[in-house]
Image (cartoon, rainbow, N blue to C red):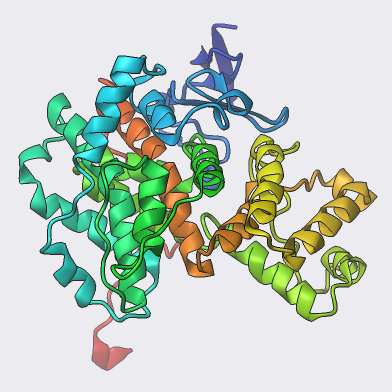
Length: 427
């Protein structure tokens, strides 16, 4: 199939057909308005493929997720987060020498300018971490004017490494500021996730021993969030970047998009829901019935997905780590018990099976974050750390695509037709 034929009244026009690597088919409507004066209407862009991307393949019907061709089941547990970051940014898994150089570059950029402390001190101590992070990432552009040119590959590369390196420091500083505790500095002798845990939970008065089981689980969680095709925040990063805005500003816009409860806040809502069930006596069947009642406002959070119409492949991986982390910490968390009951009942209930409401990645991630000691309002920030390499990879892909145009969707005007102005004394 080389072309599609569109019939409008007694006219027929031919539109090119694009076929992706995995057999995805798209009708190219780029010239539709020019040829006919007609535009397409696609609410939420659910049927619009703006990008030709080589970063991530996702098949929601079959439950498939691959980064640069590698199945998530193979790399989430086997590769470190910085290996996955390298893969997203450069398209291939690094050799030993490439990885060593990349890690060294990241380690030597984790420090944040001391002036940045003044930015945090301007916030209320109860400011939401996502808003502080977006502001801090945007502010980084003012400290590095040498690498803001969105057409300079070397400038982009150094900006990407600075962002990945400094992201964990910015998050940890925001957390410490909210607690009125001293900021902790990064340590180059620790791996990426261990360094982050050190800055989050250590104190000047006593050392903090990073548990390798916890560090590994966090690494896997970050890998599972590294990219997810053209979601709301990724599309926002690409849209802002299409104006040739610098990488820092573009990523800051993605953080703002991720902060919405319909996007990055879902794992936080899962914990709130589980807490509600526990406080309500722990009767899972009662809440299942509430979720099925169309007149009840209660919603079963962590089930179903906009894209996945099958089991979220990330949820299968993350479920095993929930038990590992809680066993290691010696915590008998009632939330995990309720979550397992909820999953078991929901998966065996015809109502959920018919609607393909399977547990998604948010269902277990919040429980793990909570067990690690992260406060609920930091869950979405952890999501942002994980999604950062995907944002950067997608931004780079858009930036170096010679066919890129500034994002400018069309609209169908449905307001008042032309009318005559009436002076105020006659209204």
